[in-house]
Image (cartoon, rainbow, N blue to C red):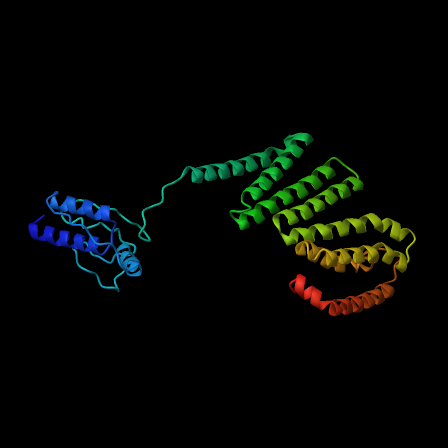
Length: 330
C-alpha cells in the first residue's frame, strides 16, 4: 500500500475516533494496523451530543462510509453488502456484517436443546401411533397421561415467557386428556356414570386452570360443561313425570344462584364473577333446552316459556346495566 493511501485511511480513522463513530479500542487497533505502530495516538475529548453520535454511528453501521475513505451518497443502499473496514489492498480484513449490519448469531445450547426436544417428541408420537394398538390398556392410559402431563408442564413453563405457547400447550394437554380418557372409557366398556364423572372432573380442572392461568374461556367452558352434565344427569328424572314447572324447578334456582354469586363476587374476583353471571343467564334457559329432548313436552309451551324468559332476562339486563357495563366490561 502506498503512503498516500495510508495517510487517507489513517486520517479517516482519526475522524471516526474523534466523532465517536467507532469504539475507541477498535480505532486504536486500526491505527496501529495501518501505521505499523508509528502513528502517535492523541487523547480524544469526550462526546458532547449523544443523539448526534447515535445517528452517526447508525449511519456507519449501515454503510455510511466507503472503503476508500470517502462518504457515500445517502441514496445508495449498502445494507445487504458485507462491510470490510478499510481493508484496502493489503488484505487486512475487518469485521464482516451480514443482513441488517450485525454479525451472524451463534447457536446456543438452549436452541440446540429445544430443537432436539421437539424432534424427540415428534418421533415419539409417530412411533407410538404405529404401535399404539399393540400395547395393553394400562400402557395406553400411561401414554395418554404422560403426554397430557408433558404438555401441561410446558404450559406452566411458558406461562410468563410466551402467552401464545401457553395457550397452545394447555389446549393440547386438555385435548389429549379429554379424547384419551373418553377413548379408554369406551374401550374398557365403562358405564355412563363413569363417563359423566370423568367429564365432571375435566370441567372442574378447566375451571381451576382458568383461574390459575387467568384464561376466561376455560372458566366459561368448564361452567357450561358442568351445566351440560347436570342436564344429562337430570333428564331421566324430569322425563319420568314431566311437567313444565318441574323442569323449571331443576334449572331456575341453579341459574339464580349463579347470577347472585356473580354479583356478590364482582368486587373480589371479576373474572370468576363475570363467568358465573353469564353462564347463569345461559342456564336460565336450560329447562327449555332440556325439554326439547323429552317426547312428552309440548313445543307450544316451550315457545311460550322461551318468550317470557327472553322478556324477563332483557328487562333484568336493562335494569342492572350499570353493574354489567362496569364489572363485565361490556
